[in-house]
Image 1 (cartoon, rainbow, N blue to C red):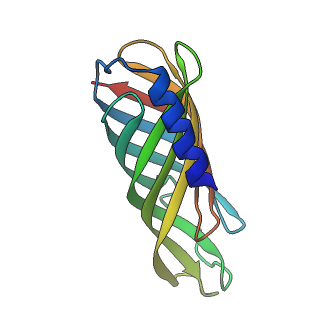
Image 2: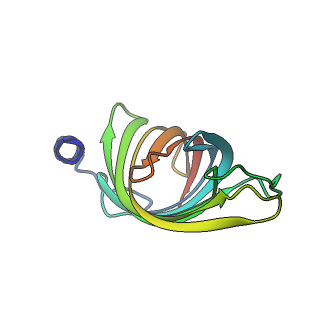
Image 3: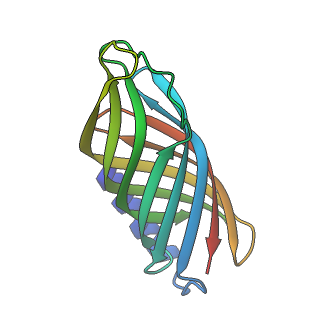
Amino acid sequence: MAAALLASAALAAQAQNTEAPDTHWKFGVQFGTVQDHSDTEPVAQFSLGYALDRTWSVEALASVSLITIRTGGQQPGDHEFDGAFGGRVLATLPLGERWNLVGGLGVVSFEDEIGNGTLFDSTREHKTSPMVSLAATYRLGRRWSLGLETSSYTQEHTFNVGLRSEFHF
């Protein structure tokens, strides 16, 4: 259902916009939170993308937890997000001259730290998951855009939200 909605939005956007973009590459920085199981932590996400045209783009991304010192002593089964990296395909739907709605589908590999009840010992778990995202962005000019993005690593039911800034070059 989500893929069909994303595809139809992309086709509608393609029909509306036939101009070529003046910048193809973009570098993004995003600060926000990730909710992994019942734990919410601050994260930073960095991305590098390439716009194929006004509608379609591809992006590589990496997310890291901003908690560098863990408290230790996690209860058995408690999860703490460590980081993720992956890629996604993005479809852009223009909502006005400067506003865009951007939907993404991709795959991420992520790592969780899982507590086992002891003070200094935990287990690391690596998983791969589909990723879906939705962002509202505002293009400030030729080089900068700002926005709000929500995403999820669907296999683990994480929920991520963050403020996003992009530099277009």
